[in-house]
Length: 159
Picture 1 (cartoon, rainbow, N blue to C red):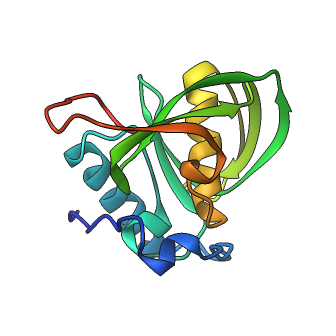
Picture 2: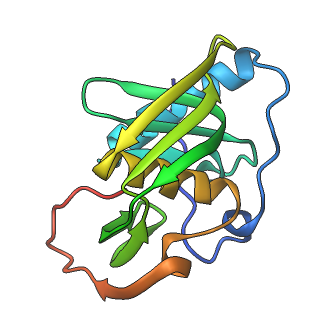
């Protein structure tokens, strides 16, 4: 496993749409492992492949008890609405209030190619929506109702 460079706002790759993964091979599995290591090293809770310069539909999310490695995610149901704060490893000096669904159901492939469905609520649902947006070249600041500069001494977790 290796740490990868996190691309920052202004990098054009963050604004491009990621391509579907058609074959889960060793390169994809290494990418997912590297993304987990990079996310943890940056104290993040989620990371999408474009954030490390790879335009593929892959995401990792720390859901508390485990880290999910997600390939080709699709939101198949969404309900409710809640406004809360978000941050992003690609935009380290900002936080913003964003409206997201309170509950989502996601269909995806795991790293073994098995189809999975995951139901998430609250903060985890927010993380899924945030990371899936990255796969479509959307940053949370595009949807933010307002943004706030972070204090450089703020140690809060992002994304």
